[in-house]
Image (tube, rainbow, N blue to C red; front, side):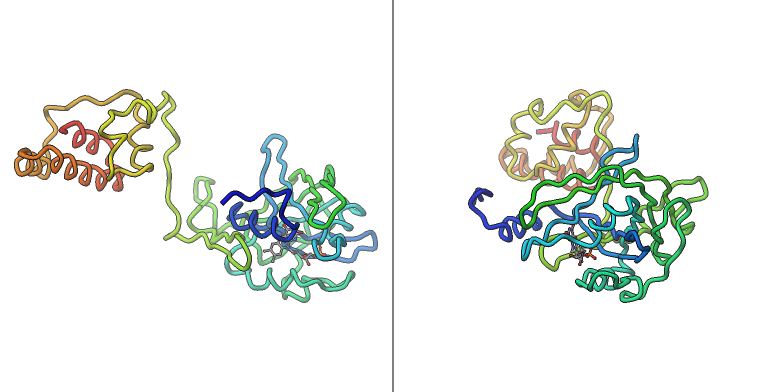
Length: 292
Ligand SMILES: Cc1cc2nc3c(=O)[nH]c(=O)nc-3n(C[C@H](O)[C@H](O)[C@H](O)COP(=O)(O)O)c2cc1C
């Protein structure tokens, strides 16, 4: 299906876009109004856009329902500072609770049961329980429209970044597997970054991968190898050649038992190469594929 966004109602646009532009990290924004009243609300229209200068943007949109603006937006116009708390799994239910539309002046720290921690260079408080938090100066508020659903970009420069000591390794790096970040998808769906759901993709070859277009036809047309397999194979910087010293009993068996029928042999070799690629044994997989 192709959805022409101009023909959809704002709520429908929001529905389809939020389900596919996902998962989105959650900015739990603490702001204050000119009288010092604190507000705390989550926003998943949020991301990092620059590290030099360090810029993050989130968007408290005009409500689709009645076109009203959010307290967070009103606050950053009055006091251009925001403490952005990054939401982790242990906070997600309280975060959702804080998104209730409490009347202006109601402090969602109290409603959601979080503890205030003074920030070092801005007035809005941080959430003590959060494991990563950003003290930000709002450098611009950019309205994307006046209608219901219109995003209001709050462009923030990050001044100080707080990270819980338990997440920092002895050599000052971050344990990605230990921050159980959560992210928002469509409707009521969230996802949790856990050890089981994480995987690594090595950075592409700095000497340039040969590209899928340069793979031999039999590999490109394989009914067994997937796009991910082709991506791994094509990340070598030159087409590998047969290594006579490559010694692999399983490969020898395949050649011995299937050589009468080339189609069967190719199927077996591709199946074995796929297994090796899944184990990140790229050079071994190439040796198997070169035997076809
Ligand atoms: C996880 C989560 C993410 C949300 N993301 C957004 C968002 O990006 N933009 C938005 O306008 N509202 C978003 N909302 C809804 C606001 O949090 C909600 O409207 C809140 O009441 C606004 O509070 P405020 O008026 O005190 O600023 C989100 C809610 C949740 C639970």
